[in-house]
Each structure stands twice: as structure tokens, then as C-alpha cells.
View (cartoon, helix red, strand yellow):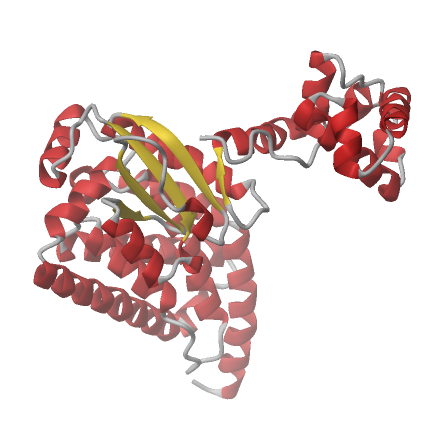
Length: 382
């Protein structure tokens, strides 16, 4: 390749990758459509959220590697992680390899589509770069897959992991649930409790503790889920986990584990506290996350002049509101804040004048709790 062509192709390459990145929604749509005819995902219970998240991260990695200088060696963490996870989810190596090939067929299709009509030469000139990236990714992912498969075979845990994967899949039918229950020696219609935490903050000691407590573990994209049969009072050492997490105390049957895990994931996503929260703790935050966008531009209808209030005044009101709504008592709120009851009363009245919200009225108290309060409701209640 002479110097002129090299310069032309490098310039075209940058433009081409920018076009492909802008077309990422089409790539993901094509990928999900391709999987509808991919038999591996019919045989193996991989949650839909896992599939979509993996496709997004793979696409971003492909573009990152293609944009890097030739010869640059980046982190192999993602392909190795996906290789290990698919092995634990029960895929065969031929199924996994076909999934990898689907990714690259669609990537090449996206590159070719974006290259039309003026950058075809740039794509052709960088064909070797694409092939090298494809080969490296496949080697990393398949190597990790094979290594994990070997480890699983040594530990005789394949059947167990497949059973767990079925339980956390979105589409497990009763026959699959019964099969998983038989492998795990659990009743299909039992009552369970579930904990979900950020797995990057889970120690090996935590894993050992929950395993010794009769817990079963399932690792998702970003969270690790523990569940066990509920046999009596809650006593699962939740306070020892110093990370964001969610706890659901009653999961009615193995078939409810997947929706329980989905709800727990949403609870973690809206939490900003380094502790494990119950659904009651997370209730206001979940509602706020779900509803706030619907009120965009119309907040004054609910909150009056709240958004025009200086931050330091908002903080003072929130502190008082939280203290009052914990008990419904002006006296107890004053005691908690070391304020005279008249001061608490005046703040609540001033808040009413500012926003139109009277927190002594249940309907208004709900609005304040969901849209303004910082206090988790019902903390530590299971």
C-alpha cells in the first residue's frame, strides 16, 4: 500500500466508524432479529436483558478496538467475561461460536452499509484490521468459555448452573421449573427470599457465608443474586453487606424468581445508599424514577414554587418533612431534630404556603414522600 492510499484509507476509516456508531440502533435491532432464528437461545435460558446488554457492550468494544492504533492491545475483560458466563448458562461451544459469528456478520454488514457509496475503498483497505480484531475477540471469548467449561466439569456443577439459569430466565415454563427444582432439591411452589447486590463489591467471604446459609447464587450482568427457601424469621446477615443491594422477603414459588430478580435490579438502580434495601425502603424511589418524566414541564402543578426555592431552604424543609413523616408527630419530629414543636409547625406551614402541599393530609403526604422526601420509608422492616 503506498503512502497516498494509506492516508486516504485512514481518513475514510475514521469517518466510517463515526457513521457506524451513529447507526448503533440498527445494529442492535438486526442482532435481536437474528437471534429469533438462532436455536441456541431456544435451548439455553438466557435472560432477554442479558442478551440486549451483551449486544450493546460488544458493539461498543468492536468500535473501540477498530478505532485504536494498529497493534494496540486493550483489555480482554469483556470477551472473557461473556465467554465464562455463557458457559455457566449451559451453552455448547458450537452454539457460543455461532453467536460470536452472528456478531461479526452484523458488524461487517454495518460497516459495509455505512461505507456506501464513498468509503468502500477505506473499508477494503482496513479489511485486515477488521479480521485481526475478529480473530482476537474470538480467541479471547472462546478461550475463556473453554476454560470455564473445564472448571465446571471438574466441579460437577454444570447441571446446577443450568438449573439456576433456567430459574432466572424470562421464559421458563413449568416443566423447566420442575426440572430445575429436581436438580436443586427445591420445591417448585416453595416460598423463598432473595438478595441482589453489586457483584463488584462482594467478597469471597460474603459468597461463602451465603452459601453456608443454604443459599443458591446466580450471577447476572452486574449483580449477584442469592436466594434460599424461607423457613422462618428473616436472619440473613443483610447488614454485613456494605454495598447497594435489594432484598425481597417473600418470593412465591420458583417461577417468581425471575420477576423478583428484575424488580431487585430496578431497586438497586434507583438506590444511592450503600446498604441492602427492602421494597418498602425503595418504594418512593421506584415511584419517583417511574413517574418523574411524566411530569416534566408541569412540576408546579404538584409542587408549587418548590423548584424556585434556594437549595439550602429545600434541605431544611426536607429534613423537617422526613422527621415528621417518620412518625406523624410534630412533637417527635421536634425531638429528633432538637427543635421546639412550634418551629416544626411553622416550617410545615411555610412549606404548605410555598408548595400547596399539606403533609398532614394523606393525599398530599404521598406527593411529598414520592417527589421530595429523602427518607426511605419503613427502613429495616421485612
